[in-house]
Image (cartoon, rainbow, N blue to C red; front, side, top):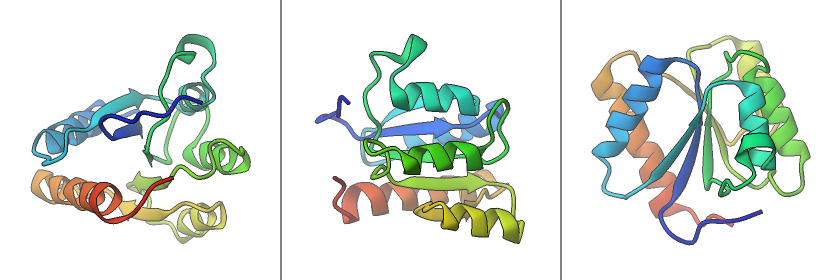
Amino acid sequence: MKKSKDKPRILLVEDNPGDIRLTQEALKESHVEITLDVVSDGEQAVDFLMQRNKYVDTVRPNIILLDLNLPKKNGIEVLKEIKAHDLLKRIPVIVLTTSDAEHDISKAYDLHANCYILKPVDFDDFANVIKLIETYWFNTVQLS
């Protein structure tokens, strides 16, 4: 699988256009130049990561921001496929969702999500969460 040696890459798996725009706006304020790829359902996410169908030339993301409430294949199903695949399981998956249900949180961690974050409703709070993700994953930790 291709891996970018240039700008850090995030794959955003999100079906809500408003949340996509919020993420894009928050990343514009970033101190790091990040490439954001967006897919809007679980099947597209798996195709993107497996480089299938229209995604054969994709570049592997450094991290994945994954919503749980997705059409076609939900986020838990996507997470399960990612973490079961030898080439994909090392990509950090950050569940970024509105669900605060204990069974969703437990299931995500059981499937080796790297963290579980509730989406803030307020733009400033949302932008702050994105900045914290950026700082932690691109400035603090070493990614493989």
